[in-house]
Image 1: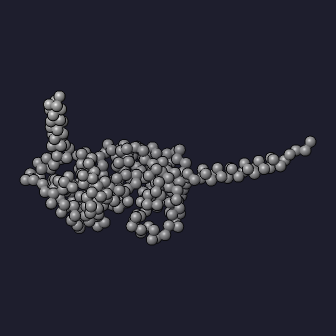
Image 2 (image 1 turned 90 degrees about the vertical axis):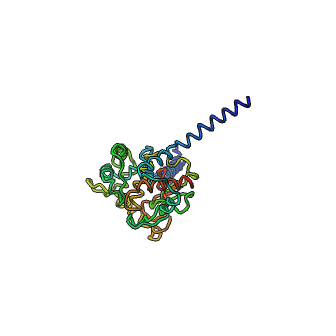
Image 3 (image 1 turned 45 degrees about the horizontal axis):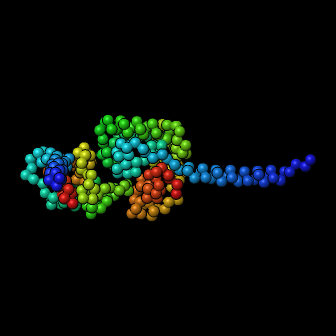
Length: 133
Length: 163
């Protein structure tokens, strides 16, 4: 009986670990890695991107933190007063699980802040950063 | 036989009084604009700003707006054609001039028949309703833009725009 339990627990753990390994976020990262022909992503680079001030985008949104706030685990606020879910996965566990939504907001927000779309390398770095937050 | 007119008079006064009270009570919901209920519209139109009630603008305004999403008040808010079509149909069906919208008629008063105003905050009635709001309140860090209805109308998400 005890053995049965251990075996079941083992199977459950295996299923869970494969689920986390091949979740939608990991799929996205794999896509970005393939597109960037990247050696890997860096949370440190992602954080730098997140905090950096840009001048080529819209003047009222110089940085990701303009709307998302400096605290990744705290809520953000758009210029029109809407609350934005925290970017940190630890604070918003369902985030980045819909690839179309992730791509939509990368496109919109990068255009507004950087004045151009983000590269797959930048997207991968940023995603790695917020997944680890 | 003498007609006891006094009870009638009292009754009449009471009736008139309750009529006034009732009217007031009804007037209390005069600033109701049905909020967006469609989940797609809520998500697509309500991420950056309040998903404004479709009844606040006439159908032709929404049609124009949905055709110019790449220039949406300074932002490129383009979305795929299928989603845009779905949203447009919802906005047009529930627009302020689509009928059945009791409070829209007032808000859209003074809008020219063929005009397609884009900013709710530039409607003549909106302007006159907010004329007493001082400048410093608009500039307050929790307000910042006239599009931030909920800063003052705390129940705006539920469609209630009373003070």
